[in-house]
Amino acid sequence: MGKQPSAWITTQQKKRWPLMILLLLSLSTLMAFLIRSTFDSCSNGSINNVGNFIREGQEEEKGGTHHQVNHNDEAPTPNPLDFMKSKLVLLVSHELSLSGGPLLLMELAFLLREVGADVVWVTNQKQTESDDIIYSLEHKMLNRGVQVFSAKGQEAIDAALKADLVVLNTAVAGKWLDAVLKEHVADVLPKVLWWIHEMRGHYFKLEYVKHLPLVGGAMIDSHTTANYWKNRTRERLGIKMPETYVVHLGNSKELMEVAENRVAKRVLCEHVRESLGVKNEDLVFALINSVSRGKGQDLFLRSFHESLKLIQERKLKVPPIHAVIVGSDMNAQTKFETELRNFVSQNNMQGRVHFVNKTLTVAPYLASIDVLVQNSQARGECFGRITIEAMAFQLPVLGTAAGGTMEIVVNGTTSLLHPAGKEGVMPLSNNIVKLATNVEKRLTMGKRGYERVKERFLEHHMSERIAKVLKEILLHKAKRHSES
Image (tube, rainbow, N blue to C red; front, side, top):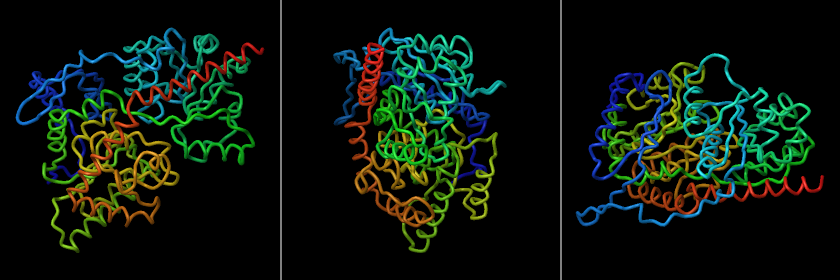
């Protein structure tokens, strides 16, 4: 079992990543890899991008024979975003970090660059001191042809005035409008698409969203969140939402290629499990999200502890089970994370609970676990991208019955849901035991989840949905221009 009490990915484990890549490359007759890496998350909290992984080559094993899929024979399909070619798009992010909002906006930037759009990025709240993560993410964008400007410079103002489309990312980004554009705000609002991801009440401040009724439109990741914003803005702020579009997200092609490649998954699984001190036959339940009270790591660990007691009390014959928390911050050492570690120590679970530093690359961990736990609290996730990523890896999901999760999974078919809050601790514990003792149920749920992803949560599905919204915003802008 686990030999590392702290259960961190250490510098020694960092050295294993190159070995893993070499092993993967030794399978070159089966596949080719494209590695876009920046930093290694196994070291000093920086990010590991070993994992935009497989570009081509997918092995099919039937009756002992091997068949190489030739992707070049497939007819290219039109990109629904082709109409954005040569359009100038300004993307305004409230911050640049490994959190969901900025990463989603970066993904939109790359989708637009693929079709030949001119894309400019500004970060409104940026640290003055050097930051490895910001440096890495900015250079990733620059390498993909995205221009990165200062949020408060004349270049940003000029870009906003000339742009065909301006995307504000998250409610907090609204502060940028008055602070930077000043007298030009009214000229820019008709071509603004406001992409909102927040589900917390403290974001409903007039200083953030006072211009919301006048923008070209709002784009929100789930119907639950869209309804919440519609009601809260009216009741709390007395303002009306603009035309609002719900756009469910999709998995990137790169992630799907890893998820569908058995060789890659096996190598990743072996490497990660070795680094954690987990045996191949053990069962791993993982929560992959930034460590914070709202994400429910504390309640997950309580449920996990209860499940260990249930297994012992009922004398159930199951492989050793482990809990993995991916999303820690070795440098921050927050009060909440200290509480988590103390709980693990107090209940002698050091060999069963493993903390992994936050990372941009989730594929290695999805390849190495058996069940994803999505335990976001209160109103839940706005959408929950990690849920569809896990389903792509044919993993069953244990999730809170709240927020966007309810629009992704099918309870009893692809997942087992439990209530948010303390009342969900025992139901989640029972669900952990239920999946730990039923291999067939785990496999069937995982397969059904994968099928659901293929039906509605792929990159091309998301591109089609976003394309419809962008066309509406551009049409709306043109109509306003003709009327003025």
